[in-house]
Image (cartoon, rainbow over all chains, first blue to last red; front, side):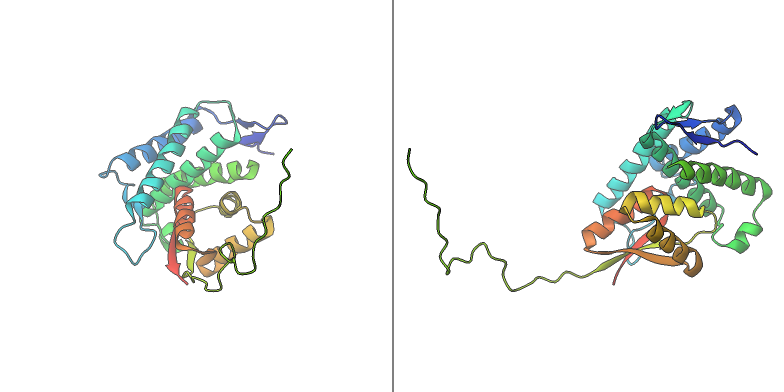
Length: 143
Length: 100
């Protein structure tokens, strides 16, 4: 039986059983989300700023600010804890949301918006997406 | 020690009462859209965290997103709808609002 990547301990903490290769993938995803939020030229920037109300060209400045601040805060906390052996619930939630933002941004930037596009995507892109999916699935299972 | 008499409110004093006229606010829906890669379990966990719905309701909404392409996950005042929509987007789901 394959061992799990995340294990909920009796004291409530979540143990991260991921090797250095896995952590490098996660760190890259966290760093990309942080950079994308701050840099308008980043490939993922557009996917992080979709309008709340599609009938308008852009959101209210307050909503845009709230979203930018929350995404950055989650990504910063996630990046700060990427080498930790144990996570608390707040840190694990920051990991989950930042990995999910990275997953969505990846598929949007490659135009993978339906099953047909997914099936025809390059194998390295599929591999990267499947890694993120596995991490997300296992993390959601302990939250 | 001075005695304290309770104040009586006359029957004509209605300033504290709810008035009959009701201001109706338009209802806005928060919609979550399907995407081909987000694990179902992740969608359920995000719904539970943001809205506090039961496990059954989270599963029901997630399945509606999966099978029908979208689901209305909350309805109400515009300000709150916008706030929930931002929280869903921050969590990495594709979400918009629309007037009901």
